[in-house]
Image (tube, rainbow, N blue to C red; front, side, top):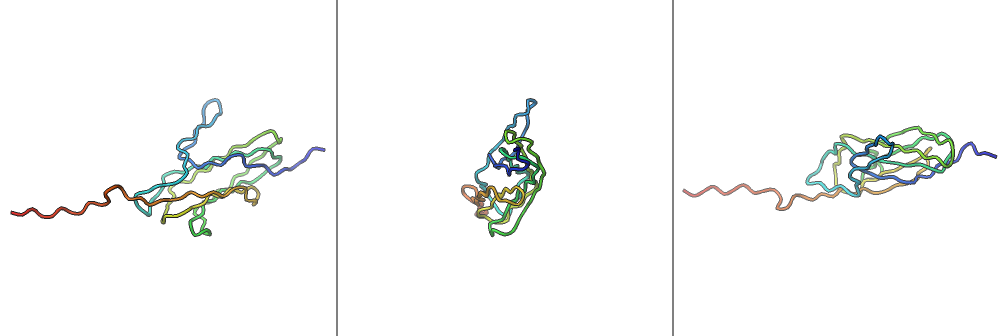
Length: 145
């Protein structure tokens, strides 16, 4: 008996600055992100990519990727994409692109990856506020005449 539907496994999910594809079809991930260190808040990220690789499934599916704020409930961005796996030995790669994403407060943001509304992975992306060394410069005292 051949199964007509097997929910796939999420083999990898990585947050990065960019994803490029070579002529050969291989992917290059640029700037894999474990945390975001910023000099001020709020701040906007020009572009963030989420690279997901699915395998060991059969059928048609909907991947949902969400970025959740530190309050744990506010969804800042969400993306849905349909994909198919014809055989359990195949894989599918989906790249989600979030642009002009604003980080308003420091704290742990979360990337959530679901397939057909089943949570497969949830991982933190800490946003850390770290002002530049020395901080803002105080105005110079007026010179004595």
